Image (tube, rainbow, N blue to C red; front, side):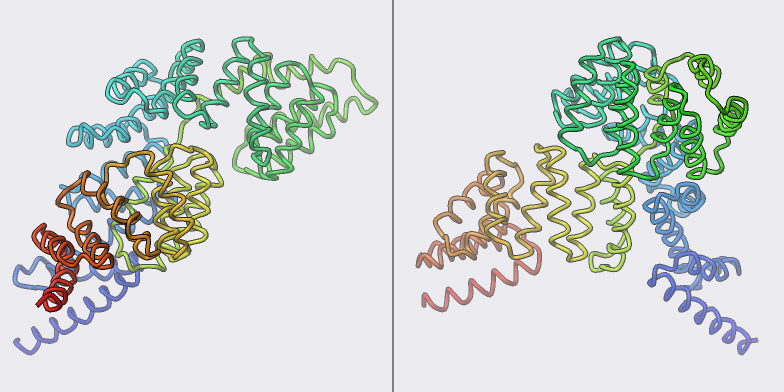
Length: 539
């Protein structure tokens, strides 16, 4: 029996080693199978392999769920995250991931339960409260959505996203004039808030102020001529003004920029029907259907247009009658307003992407590179979210792709020039890439913002030290001390400044402060070495 027991343990050890190898290679699905094979043999309390397998099984499910979440595969992420909770019920962050997944696959009640569970334990997490509002929006509980937005704004009155979503909720509730005010508030805080300006323009058109609507949307097209969706919405406004040729040109321009722009093809087909160009309209409808064959909503329209073409090969004069028969008499502006209130998807934010990254080791460059296409895909779908460009930049820097990272941070700043986190990240990326002069330019802009965290001042001071601008470095590091007098790295850098200025006593005093202020071990050893060297020179 002892011999058989040893054989069993040996087999279990081999299986465990296979599972760990798969886990470390991020082949989480196969690792889960191996760990489950071990744990299904029973909870042997004295078996180290069982206990380790149980732990890593939970970790593998969590990491697989988070990767699927990052890849946008929300339906497959759900079961993995749900099982991860069984292994780690105290990990509250899992509920926020689940809330996003449930919302994006249309399970709104479950999303509400997940967000509320999360917020019961983290009531001050305003981003999650806004996600809860989006889910209430999606089940058309407008009063509840409005109430949540107002509650957040009492705490953070200049939260542009909340003003935007408050406008969306007012729009859903049929309060278009209030929606206008909310979109204007969002733009007051962030003048480059694209979605807010689009909705403001279309809402103004809905209220009959077509000139103001045209002014808002056409200005955006001038600023961002390469964005297909802006040409699409400009086409909507022109159609609302009954300027059909211009509307047609706008929809065609949107399609030229993005051949897969299904909504633009449908709207172009509708307008072509209105002017009696049924053959061209049919072509657009068929191309739109090819882009999403599973959506059968166009089938009736396509068949009806084909009948019109066959029945009236030499032309037909009652175009408006046929147009209303096909599409109703609601009007293109009202249709667009209604489409705004369709299910809102929650786009993973910069914070969530960073929380994804934290589950994986800093040196895991291949993982960060594998996530780059994911973020790029999100950006293609949502090109005007500065958080996503900031996230892309962060991943590029972690993957040592500094030029791409800097470009992504600059894109975030084009969208929102006041996005301090993106500017700080750009500053760090340039510094890490050795582009010190460019980093100083960004640092000088940040200095005007009087940032509160001392690591920025230390980083800028370090650049000035490397450029041998010691007086400049001294002044910057003094500002770091103002922010946190016990920030150990500041004193270490000041010691370097004083040493280069020939002020060895001052350098020794700063190094002693560095050691006293509980630095990380690597810095403590470095400071002690420098202190010993200077002390020996003094003696």
